[in-house]
Image (tube, one colour):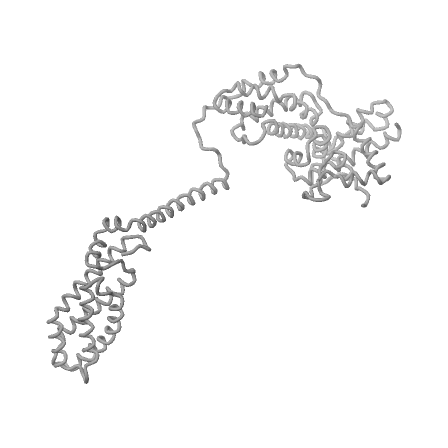
Length: 277
Length: 190
């Protein structure tokens, strides 16, 4: 170890702790310096000289005061003091950081409360489906018609399909039988609807919703005929399709079903996400 | 003790002015001692004690209860004492340009009338040492007094003087160095 500097000797004299972080050999108590002084004659002499000089510096003591000096001071300043007005209750003084922390904590608590409410609600619903159905008449009506809980996306797709089908049927009903150009777009639309209709039929079991299932069957036949009729979809073919559509009351059926599915969607949008219809 | 201080402060802030009397009585001697050591004058020291307690009363609402009232009022007293020394030096001190350090106040007491040899010969060794102490700058002397006589740490000195801890250490080092250099002839004589 090198010889101690004057500054280190002064720190050692006053017992100033080192600033190194704690750890082996760095306890802050200057044990290294003490050990060095014990073994180094030069540093020991230097420290002894410093100690002798500093020990000789006299303490500056004020002249002795009377025992009641404090009272004397108080008597001399008391007349100059104005009484503090009693303070009303105040919230503790908080630093900016503490205020921020309290604010964040409050916000977090609110968020936790809301999240907990949603979670508890969804948990309760999943455990009490009958009570939920009883409190939701629109859903209950759906159940009465045999529609079991269906994924929301299926209901939306079905509603869209019924809407398109209704428009197709309306166009078919009012098709100009003398206009040869009417058949082609109707056939294209029929082909498009046919694929969608089959998809919907797959997702609707007859036992779940007989009315819907029947309507989709009727629609399937009509669409298949419109899409696959040989040659051009001329006036005669359109007349035959109109007759078939009117005979089944298909347009009315589709309108009723489309209206029902729209109601189901509206009822579903009023409920929390993730629920069932 | 500390708990009593806080109770008294609460009472004062609630309108009980006389509760401050207990604080004054309790801390007056400590303040007088440090004020005297810094000012070197009994009358000034007594003024400092009164000013410190008056200032402390007026600022009592800013006192943070997590700290010690004793430390807080001590700091006020040191600052009052330094103000007193600064004010006095405007009248009876001269600047020694050869030792001017722009980083700190380098106003020193003119003590040419009392040379070390003369005082040593008269046997007033203690007086010479006190004189050597007075030859330090205000910052050095205050840092040395707080370190050597008041037992303050560098951090405490730094807080009182409003400088960083390293600055406080350096002030003590310079004070010790100057004192020893100034007292060296006396040691040889002894």
